[in-house]
Image (tube, rainbow, N blue to C red; front, side, top):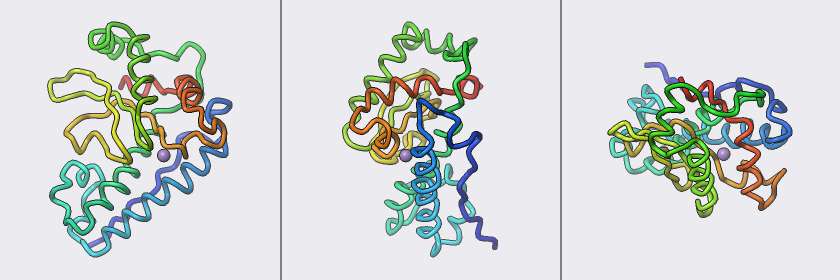
Length: 202
Ligand code: MN3
């Protein structure tokens, strides 16, 4: 049996590609240090459990109760960190003029669920601001297919609750402290400029 180690995905852009909104130093440390640490600690947690090494991180997180109690917390935290960040990088892109909002069917779904794109942004921003301590704000699709905004603590992933994350924002201080210090609101405002609406609409 081959031990399929979890690996740090390469970024789809360079560390300085999201400047000036997300700075190069933050991106470098966030990806090469923080995300790498989640990957390493997930692999370490799985060392003693060969049957779990064949599963994808998504499969592990969707069925945390199937993970032995001894490593459940580690899989939830580090597996969640690995999975959430892998999505997070893809949800961002160097800012493209004129592509700063969703279009087509996805825009329609947002309008049905929130009334307007501007209202959605407000609801999502407020959720990201209100998230106490470390966590994430999410746009998710629920079981009935409706779109909702939620937040989760730490690295808890919506997929562990049976929800499909369509967009997520990391509001851990490590995501913004170098450039924005305690100004989470400024980080969120800047982040909207680098959201990859093309990717999310798909
Ligand atoms: Mn992070």
